Length: 263
Image (cartoon, rainbow, N blue to C red):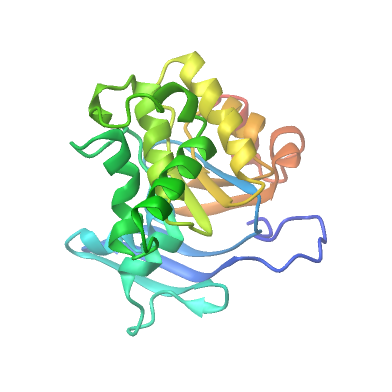
């Protein structure tokens, strides 16, 4: 088993520290004793074959697995030195701090404006309508969507194209000023042009946010991420700089997956 800490010795404190994480669905263990640090304002990719545990591990980072009956977690996940699984932690503000963008775009059946305004309203981030309008505009600018929708904010978000809907969901996520954005295969339902826009957007967003992406596309991981973690059968096989993972992995399983021998 390879070392689970990246090989370069940067003096940057991690924003997420995972210690001996195990996740179970009933009697079945999906994640096996994984320890992993995530650096701030960096894109980290989780790769591996279907069913390897990468999405389960991603969802553990904002307690989305809590919503699955029979799912339980052991170990610690610290975000800014706070254990998010401590009994006193309220998951509602946690999920604002650790936002989630899903595989299929899932805009609310509301206007474009109300899709983005929903979170800030719930969390009381705006005192006036003008402040709310500013938050919505800034989030839509941040997701690269403002110029395309600024004249139709009152129209339904569901009327946008697939790629625009996904950027709307990203705008909805960043509107509540998260620290971390989780993305679970955010481009798998999109065409290549929409995918390229989302990838460019991720690179831009990483200046302000920590981004963790699950992707089935090794090419995407290689293009956008700085760190890559390779999962296999619930184990973390290797975690390192993306360039190292793709050009000089230390584990033969990683090499076999990268070169297409399985997966």
